[in-house]
Image (tube, rainbow, N blue to C red; front, top):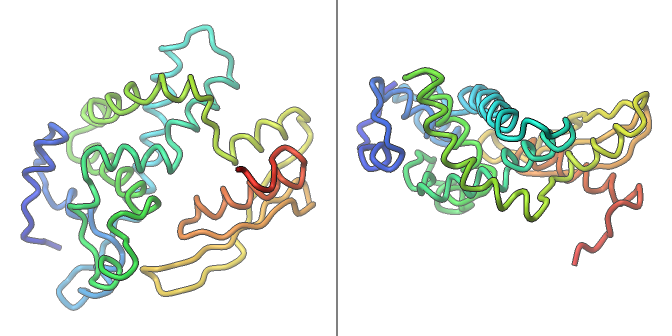
Amino acid sequence: MSEEKDFSLLEKEIDYVFNDTRLLTVALTHSSYCNENRKRGFSVSNERSEFLGDSILSVITAEFLFHRFPDADEGFLTRTRAALVCEDTLAQFSNMISLGDYMLFGKGESASSGGRHRKSTIADAFEALIAAIYLDGGMENAKKFVLPFITKMLDTVIKTGTEDYKSRLQRIVQQTPEEVLSYTLVGEDGPPHDRTFSYEVYLNSNLLGKGKGRSKREAEQAAAREALILLGELDEDPS
């Protein structure tokens, strides 16, 4: 797979030059582009890279917080990490480097549905970019890329106490150790490049909430929010 696209401005922005630019191309290739260009040999989107990048980001952030706050308990570390790697925060990181402007989209996704600026899409691309840097230059280069974003956002996260719905629900459930919280994918609708996912969240075998979203992460958050409302931990109208 190859694409004649100049990523030099992005490389300058992130202060990293790729040895293998194919890794960068994959990281910035949305599934809609593959669907429209399979006959030209484009069959790999950034979905696998996103999976890897998510894990790398979690490790880097956990290690940073572990050393940055040597006296903090597990709860603080878990909540802070969740806030730093949630979809909203990753979308902000992505916007800092205008990542959506460099992505490869199918014509329909880019023009009609605003994919280039969709929060879930650019958050996923940021994770895929982390994976590309890791595969191209190793963990140290991945850290050099990620840590400036983390440190820039850290004070804001601590001051505002930002905590996503999943983390908040998990924290509440953990107060009773024998309780088990689980999320189940119950539906997928729409074409591959424009999916809507449906999730349910259970406490043991009891259904607490349902949610839909344009990404699995977004749908899980929606289900967790409904669960918090049911448990009386969140007002139905956040305003």
